[in-house]
Length: 483
Image: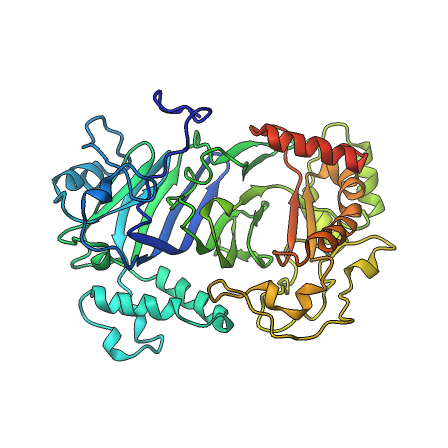
């Protein structure tokens, strides 16, 4: 990826443009379609915003150079604005420079439209007080609505996610929702006419955009079976080329994602529960949904789309013989993914995964915990000596595994491993077989697993980070079975 000539990420810090001192993104809802042949991810992202208490009227600090305060943006004269030039450049440049500007971190994204979301159309049917709804879009009404969502107790997290999802599908504001935007090399800037402070800025906005094939947040390549795939690969620019976000450390948020991908592909994300794909009408696409309930940096969101298979605990003999005899991993005309699903019954389209963040305790702590003979007892939860002492944490109110009695003694969390067909046997022996022992050892040393489940994906070689390369080398040495 080409970087600006005046900025070298080897010697300079990554620029932080987002003005998090004035407004914060509390929740993201992504609705994306992955086109492997065109190497493009397109769709929209809805941002649920909350102004900071010290936000106040826009001052020179709003466009100052300090991280978290935004960055001064000179008028765009070089055509760096993407998407509609009418909406993206002319309207922004002619808007009042004294209006409050929402600044988001992004890179190599083609933004076509930014709009305010009109939640009035869904507030009353959802059972909220009538005074919240109004015929015209109202900042105060919208603020009350969003504040009600974020103040819901963690015990009602499923209902909260449902409401956030419904809000993200609401239409754009027809009157009074005119929003101007422009992009430069490292940011997206959004304004609304006559809004002078973060307190008056819309609480929910929708951004339509598409990634560029050259964007550095994801890697478009071919797997070891010579089939197209894409995944987040630990880029120096984090996820800026995947979606507009806030990168300063203070920016912690939750997210939901709806990803459309070709029906023969598997979509993996860093969500809390296993996704169960659904048919997308009569198209040859499937829809995968993921979410997280614990606020985290935007850089922790991961995405992988490809023709991978879930590694079974025991490879069926017929498939094992086929894998052994294959010289060219891509020569077979059959669909190995379908054959694996049918033969093992452990396909990725199984029943939803029960995790530690559900409202009730998991029915089985060994669900989806693929272990080998002798490892079963590692996957069992040991409640001996556990006493419910009313454990509490000092962070904000969200579902937390550290407050769950079962999590403290869950030595092995549910886990899966995915790989290309040609590496199924090596992955089975070199990775899957050792996972229960590794997870149990981590629990013994570090305590509660911070995540309710674990997916491991075997991707092609080609990490830009030498730190990751050293980690993989050491891992292979420990496994004594390089893949």
